[in-house]
Image 1 (cartoon, rainbow, N blue to C red):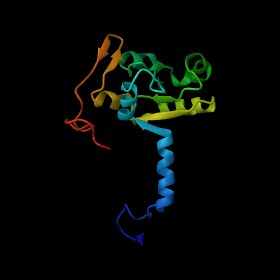
Image 2: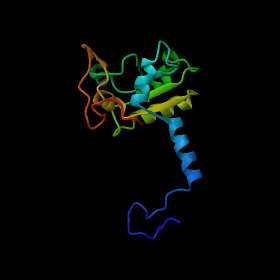
Image 3: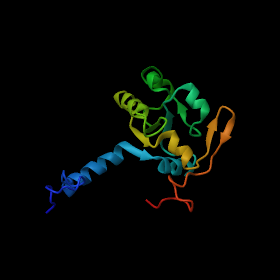
Image 4: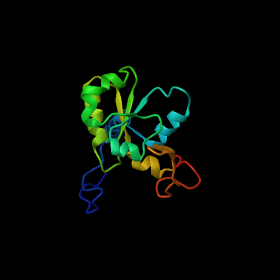
Length: 158
């Protein structure tokens, strides 16, 4: 039995029962993906089975975006999604990074329009920090991987 009277701040509120935790984490994976998984999906072949949507401003898009992404700012989702996206293809949204909820708001707007959607955790910030190639208004770019976000030897193994 877990001691919830502990002074340990981690255990002041008891962890969920294993079945509840499994349901929660299963659901979380239905709503989110991460930079590494998106990159692997895009590199796997001609048709990854999803489309990536950058929901930031034009200035942010020009500064850098995921190669092959569709530019659809959050505020324009209701009026432009039908022209830019196929409702039968799952969508992965991203914004700047973990400190921004623009991708969440875009995902909500798309879901309300009937799209199957996931949010890319980490956003463009972690795409660039993991050393993945991106496009700018000047052409292709890439920076060295930040060792705090990805091991120097490669994938984290998760």
